[in-house]
Length: 400
Image (tube, rainbow, N blue to C red; front, side):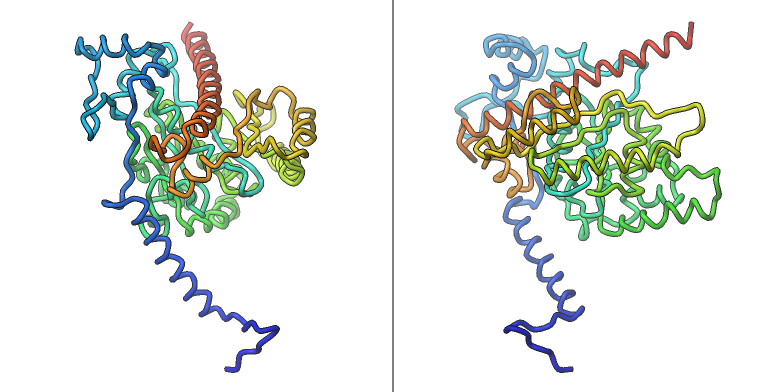
């Protein structure tokens, strides 16, 4: 077969795309091996006494005193033997012991949060991972569910979607009706306190499976509630469930949002992202208003719009920020995630700002990014506590 040359470039056949994909996968495997050397697995960060003290509202002397008393894990010396540091499980033990008022009551269940937006590139997956890590550090037990066939969240946990994840490890069997509860797909991660339901490219077939079941099983089948019912047991086992959705208002995205108590929409303050968010919410309302039964409705504990990738030097930012505030009002969180080189460095290393080791970027840059994400995590945690209180009141009223 003769290839036609146009302006110096050859036509591309399907076989060429297949070869290109194989090359790209090999390069990614090499990059991952280099980034995660020597064992090709990720490691959780360690924490200084000052970081631990900030988390549990103690100064370093109080941390040292409690550690020496043996009431809580005492940590150990770093590799150089020059300073004390605490491993993540130890930090979580301190948090669970000293932050009890912020933890899930016994008669409440997990708060489920969907991170959703119409388009990619808005830090949706980064937001989901960072929120999960921040809540885990604070003592919560977290389940993250990757519903995006691209598997970016899965990759950030050090797992290659198409090489290390099979269809039966994802939510696909749930969507096909082969499983009724998500426990079959849950796996631990390198980050203590976070479990994962991974994703891979074959998950895209869920977009055909759900409407197919609606057709075959008839009006009694609620395709929008498959994930809601599938995580019922997980709600008893975890404090928070975070769902990363595809960058589209798909069948799977609708499932994630209908299963959730709260929705977080990361939104960079630029005109195209703002316009896309308007379309997202308008279409979501149109698609879902007929899904709920007559006399019932869907109530969210919170809907947050998180200004992300904010470039303070962009003169258009302030204008679009005003549009967003006018459109979403009190739903816009009162802080912003700045666009920093730290975030870019963390992504290049398959991680978030919570993964970064001291010295991997400028200390001021790291602190700026961490401060913003800490505010975000603490705000979401406060909303979770409020939702738990409402659950407790509802249970007590039902028992009265």
